[in-house]
Image (cartoon, rainbow, N blue to C red; front, side, top):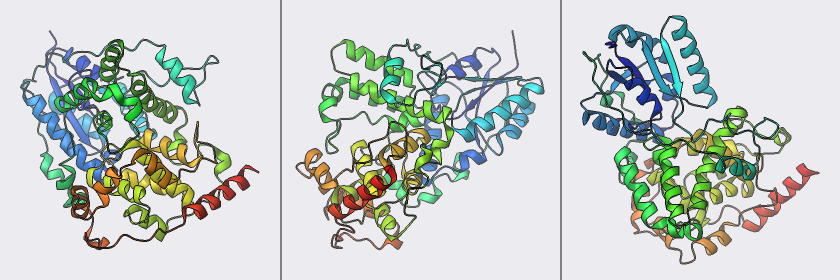
Length: 464
């Protein structure tokens, strides 16, 4: 029997179940060394994402300890760190889950090529998505650019069953490890980390409980209630899917079972497919992360950063639903999806501001930050992306609030002076912002009618 250990390179797959890379590493027979590398690529994460990563790593370490295992932490370039660990442990193989963003793909391609040239086994596995981005193709063999046919193609495919937690064996000797607390992943959050901790649901077990709770109740009214931010009507699994604390195949098959029981899961399944579509596009058209997906938008007269954009970031636009959403994100690390569309539309259309400015703020503030969904979502709203909203679709924030928050419950939660949400936001917000509970609400920074007219004029000129 093989007595040499195998490295499991942990990335955005902080779970033991439904993890093909871990299952393959465990099949080696000589023990598994789980290792997470804080490399320069990972160091670029925004403040909230780094904080949330630290929470997820701590939860994974506890989960591994329940199986008599350890999580080894190393800081440095991925290739050199893996080479050192292979030397330290005598391991001959490394397994990891694939990533699909351009930066990660470039890193992983180099790691695999060099390790193989040195005689090691280096294998990447699926696990982050339902299917690999290249496996869903049009009749002509190309990639999809519109969501609806992508959904039809994806839903017609069989989705592999989740693999169970493998039997894990410790190596004969553990290599040295950094201490997670020494990394100070939450340092940039300062007091905001304590606030976010009240809202985060962290770890594999908690993610499974969250899925079960959703499929046992809210999913039955998901289609009708999902756009109402005051209701507890969504799964809130984006946080856990982002960090791989639950596998998408686990969620898909559980939702399919609920659908068979008549619980009306189709719209929830479509949301999973929307996430899949975002990664499909990022893989095939990686420029979507940083440039207008449609090149004809490059000449659009976006505004750059400005005092208006700063007011938007601080939740000080004077538009209630917009400010409530921005406060929710800063205090909790997430934002209701309907409200994400409203605040993005306000920034890119009423304020005519480049979508990349908004995407960058989301990068820094979201604990469920996902490079594919964030880029596609912003470009969809702005009009510059694939399957985009038509140029004349300008969300009216007040109209959206009346329709989806008719009792103003959501807005009051984040704007009322003594509300719990307001207290959390003010505790999390930087002191330099000078915000207090007793400060009056600001006047709207722009008339909604004037902002809409300006946006439509600019969009019509571009179209012409």
